[in-house]
Image (cartoon, rainbow, N blue to C red; front, side):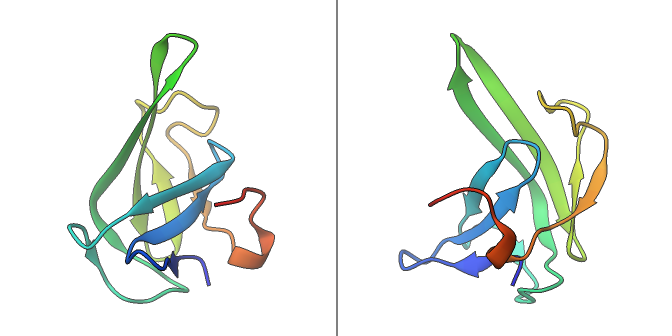
Length: 92
């Protein structure tokens, strides 16, 4: 599975750009396909890092993560397949 449902009713996936898990809740539209997920609208994660806001902004479509140009990591403007849960490099 590329997206998992957590005990607290959130959905989690591994972000290749941030090298960590990101989550969303039922406020987002999700096609309920855990292997080829599509989520909308976009997901924007903002995290404090060294005194500034670090941004990861993406769409998840048909099992791929489409990183937008405003991401602060090396995968900005790239499309990569979501990793299967067994291959995630991050903990919850």
